[in-house]
Image (cartoon, rainbow, N blue to C red; front, side):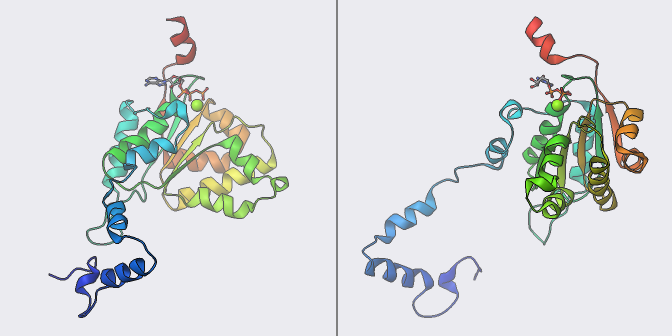
Length: 235
Ligand SMILES: Nc1ncnc2c1ncn2[C@@H]1O[C@H](COP(=O)(O)OP(=O)(O)OP(=O)(O)O)[C@@H](O)[C@H]1O
Ligand SMILES: [Mg+2]
């Protein structure tokens, strides 16, 4: 059977591979060595690639919070394949607002949730930022193309937005957060948000338009009020 992947079947006469071997031979390169390169195992599994893109502290994080795991199942159930036979991709789904004291394990659960999705075999295009880093990237003085930066965070299928409400509030912070959340809200893009603040404090800090959208698009996950950092050191 002819397949698109085998260039030898595409045409009669010398195949693309034969032609390539001729070109390599003319340049004194042994094509067997080049072929062998193609046989090497991929250096990164999707999970290894995922770990490489994560902050070291959360590289081995695996989500175990029941509500976070329920969220991964919901997002996985809504994943779709871009074409017949292609790998299913995370595209849209619900979001989580993970709230709790410092050290409760919110960021751990957020990165761990991405890992659970990758392990399930889905294609996951994701990004992570803290709200403070995002505002710093968007600040006009940083001289980056702020619109493109914001578009990238607002369009990526899965976003971790860590420490929402931790940055000093201002009109700029409120506006940029509204822009980001509104786009993700409109397109039902799954977003994992962590915060130390109670909802009323988030409203004071980010305005009602942001918190109204968060109320609809997220399930709130409350963490045990235990600082795991101090707890661990005390043990
Ligand atoms: N389920 C877990 N299993 C093992 N270690 C955990 C777990 N959850 C959190 N930790 C560890 O506890 C510490 C605090 O977790 P994390 O940074 O996620 O807290 P946080 O709630 O995001 O805190 P903050 O609000 O200050 O950002 C980290 O060292 C993290 O690796
Ligand atoms: Mg955190």
